[in-house]
Length: 254
Ligand code: OAD
Ligand code: ZN
Image (cartoon, rainbow, N blue to C red):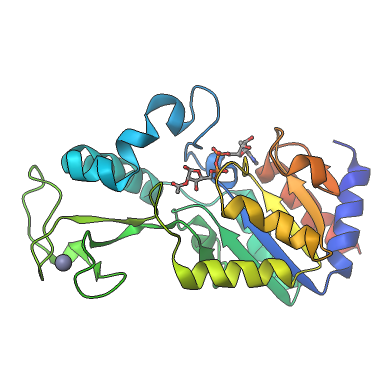
C-alpha cells in the first residue's frame, strides 16, 4: 500500500471537523479475537450462526449457547487491545469531534482508552434476563449470583427465566439509543473511517452509505474487499494494527 494513500488519508482526517469511525471484528483480529467470516478461522466458518446466535437457538438449547458465549467472553477478557485500537484512541486525543461506533461485543476500544464507544451489537461482558422482566434491558450482574456452573445458564433472580448474554442476536432489533446515535453520527460527519468490517450485516452496514449520502468522505481499512470498498474514497489495504499507527504518524507530520 503506497505511503501516498496514507498521506492522503491523514490530510483528509486532518481537515475533518467531525470524524466518525465504524469498526468490525477485523480491528480485534490482531488481538487474537476471531472474526466471523474470515474463511476457515472465522467463527461462522466453524459454527452455524443459526445454531448459536438466535433467540430460537437459545430457547432450544440454552446450555450450548450459554457455554459458547462464555468461551467467547473468557477469550475476550484474556486479550489486550492492539496497535489499531490504540491508534484510534489516540485519534480521539488529536482531534476534537471523534465518535467510535463498533459492531464488536468486546471492550478492547475502551481498554485502549476510547471514550463513549457506541456498541451496536451489545457487550459480551454483560448479561440480561431473557424475558427482560424489569424493562429492556433487564441487566443482571452474574458475579453476584451463586449458581452451579454445570447447570447453565443461571436463572434471573427476579422471574426465574434464563439469563442470556447482552448481545444482539440475528433477527433481533439493535438497541434503540445506540442505533439512533450511530445514524446521527453517520449523517453529521465529514469523514467516516471504516475499519475491519465485511459490511455484511445491516443496519450497521448501511452507516457508511448514509455518511456518503450526506457528503462524507469514506476511508476504508481492510486487507480484503468488503461491501463498502466500491464506494470508499480511499482504500487502505492491509491490517488495521499496521496501517492505523502509520496514519497517526502522518497526522502528526501535518
Ligand atoms: P466479519 O467477520 O464479517 O468481517 C471482518 C472483516 O475484517 C473482513 O472484511 C476482513 O477482511 C477484515 N479483517 C480481517 N483481519 C483484519 C485486520 N487485521 N485488520 C483490518 N481488517 C481485517 O465481521 P463484522 O463485519 O464485524 O453480528 O461482522 C458483522 C457482524 O456479523 C458482527 O458484529 C456479528 C456477526 O454476525 C452479530 O453478532 C449480531
Ligand atoms: Zn427476569
